[in-house]
Structures are given as C-alpha cells and as structure tokens.
Image (cartoon, rainbow over all chains, first blue to last red; front, side, top):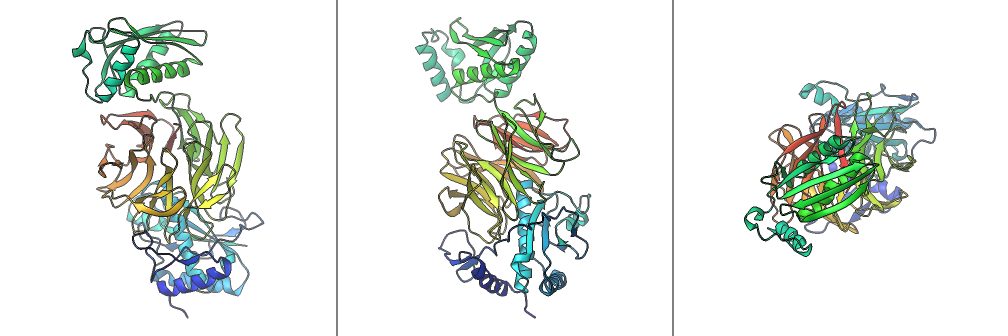
Length: 174
Length: 383
C-alpha cells in the first residue's frame, strides 16, 4: 500500500507521464518564476484520454453517479485530504480490477467568480484523477469535467451547504 | 487639461471664434461640459431626444441643462431612417454636422459617440454591444443587447448550461462555453448569420475564451494536458499552450496590442494576477495587495487592469494601475463580479445584484443598465 505523500504522487505521476507524454515532466524551475516545484521539478499531471467514443458524459443516462461517494474539498482548495483516502482507494481498486471508465466532475461552492470556479472545479477533478493514478489506476480510463458553481448539491447558503457543494462527483460509465 | 486642448485645437481649426469666452471653457481633466439638447425633430423626435440625452449623460462627458450655461447646443432631425445631427458652440459656430443612417437607436448612438469624440477627443461608448448570461428561461443562456439595455435578444436556446460569453472586438462574433456534449466545449457564433461551430472540444474542460484585439485568435483555459492551462488558439480552434504550472489558470485577457495577456493563477496558493507574453514564457505577478484576484480585463488604453477581489467578505471590482502599481476598489455595494472595460477605458460593465451595471470609474457613478432577466452574469462588451 503506497502512501499518498506529495512526493510519491509526483514520482508516480512523472513515471506515468513519461509513458504518455514526454513533455509533461521537465526541469525548468528558473529562479523568480511563478512555479513552485519540488526540488526543481514540477508536473502538470497526466494528459487526458480522448472522450469516450459512445458519447458517454457525466450528463448521459448510461452513467451511474451513485456508486461512489463524492470527494469533498476545503474552501478554495483542490487538495485531496487524507480523510478521502478510503474513497480514493476503493475507486482505484475498482478501476484496476476491471475495464470501466469513470468521469470525474468537479464542482465549487457559490462564492467567487464563475470562470475562476470552473477552473477550480477542473483542478479538483484532476486532483482526484492524479490521486487515482498514484494508486495505480490507468490514466486512460479517467475523464474529467468541471461545472464550477452550477448544479449545487445543496441549494442553501452557509458553510453546511458550501461544504456539500465543494466536491468531485464520480460517474461510472455502465 | 489635455482634453480641452484637443477640443480647442479642433474648434480653432474649424474656424470657430471660441477664445472670446475663455472662462466658460477652462475645464479640468474629466470635468463635465455643459450642454443643452434643444431637441430632435421628426415623428419619433421625442424618443430620439430621450435616447440621446441618456447617451450623453452616461458618457460622463456632459452635464445636460438649459441654454444659459451651455457650452454646446445639440439638435437634430430624424426622418426616413436618417438622423441629421448638429452640435454648435455657444457663439453659434458649428462643431459637428453630419447625418447618420440606421434605425432610430443606432443612428442616435452613432451621433452621441461622434459628439463625445469630437468634443472630448475620447471614444464614445453608445454604440457598444453587450452579451451576457441570464437564467430567465430557467436555464443559463447567452443574450445580447445594446449597451443601454435596449434590444435584448436571447441568442442561445441550448437548454443546458451556456456561459462565459466573449464578444469579438467588432461585435460580430461570439465565443461561449456550452455543455451540450456533457463536457465544457467552446462554441463560436457568427452573429450575422447565426451559424454556430463547436471549435474546441478537447478532453476535459474548455472555457474562458477571450478574443485577441484584432479578433483573429483567442485565448482560453483547456485541461487536456492534465491541468487547467492557458492556450492561444486560432479561429479554427487549433493552438499552443502558454502556461505550465501545477495549479489552475483562468480568464485570460489580451493587452491592446495583443502582445501580452493578463490572467488569474493560484500557483501561489491563492488566485493572483499574472501577465505573460503572447509568445509564451513565464508569468509575472502583479502586486495588487489583495489575496483573491480573478477575472482580469485589460483596458483598451493599456494602462489599467480591472479585476475581481474579495474585500471584507464581499466580492468587489478593483482597478490596478500598471503605471503606479496601485490598486483601488471602484464598485460600491455587495458582490460586484466580472468587470469588462468599455472602449473609452473610463467605464466598466459588471454584474451585480442580478443585473448589469455601468460604472464611470472617474466619478464613481454606477448605473443599472440591464435588469429584469432573472439572474444576469458574466457581461462582455464589444470594443
């Protein structure tokens, strides 16, 4: 069982990325630039596979959104917290043991501007994807999409609702 | 004083004897000029007069009043789809005399813009077109309108989520993010023909399109490489990546020459503004002194960046001066979002209180221009 430290994720990501895209892991952290890499390295993640050919999307009827619980996030954060490791491990095992495709849909709470929230939602979905890849799941079976602050899980305002809305939902293509 | 010098130079070269009354035209930069609308004659003259008065007031350049204090007298005749407009100074010299064709509002807006430009030397904003998101139909759809809220038209009927509109500088094309495929794709609409093309459908999320100043290319956020990054894209949708980070980038906006972009990135832990060369490289952070900085928009004069901040728990519109490096909050009231410059670099459109507001950054005067359409968000303006 591999632990989910940032460095482990980074190493696994780099190994995985090299197989898929030689450009994804490069040294280039010049002094004074905006990248905050680890030991001079940084990664962007693993390129997404082409969309499913059968038109399956998070919105289509052939996707089961109830099989796995959503992964929740802190305010303005895309960090997969340790408390979500159970969901990550069971989803990674599910992916490794079969040939299913999952669509990870990122969402934010209502606070903040809409386009920033679309980007934040996508980063959350990609963070879950990276955590799954770090657990050995195949990058080619994991799609992402962000809905930003659209389609909240709870329509209320306040921390209870916001906490439910900051999430990545997991859609399993049947 | 610069504006006045321009106006005086114009008047002198026009052969108008204006120097007789120096006291009445000694205006400070940004001060309003007194003007009197003596009326537009013709069948729909009263309506045309009302549109013109609103245009000149919203321009911020004029204080409308009686003839006694007026530096300029404005009049016209509207008939047969033709507006004959006339501006004279207080000594009766002609400042502007020209005819404008089109429907009533369009002709009056053209006259208003040319009046502002002739007298102040600055661009007018009355012919500006807007697009925005409204949920009035029950779903988020894209709408278009004139800058003053007239001629509202529902553009999309996707029945899903249609957001993040961007008008081309000439107002003839529109890019937006639509979820019809179940993913976020970028669509382009030719507003003349109505033809629509899905031009970016990469894996992941494609959103936040923004046109280059000449309208030939655009920037957007794509996540296909495994992280939300900025890309520079051609009109056909192909392109190249601009940024390379471990975090998310969003909301690119071009400098007026198109050589640079400003965008928001949370690479430092919180969303901050960065500028980057359109040919790539690394982003340079703008020190705004705010912890949450999103949705930047570069002014047409190149001198300012309008953007969103979180300020004491509220979201507000701020302006960063590239010259001085100073930032100030310019909106009043709660939760003002998504500022976009008008072409005069003096006014901002933004969303607040389910409406679109027009703010005169110079005076702080804030006017609601589009309302009554459910919740309105993400305005964009032609240049």
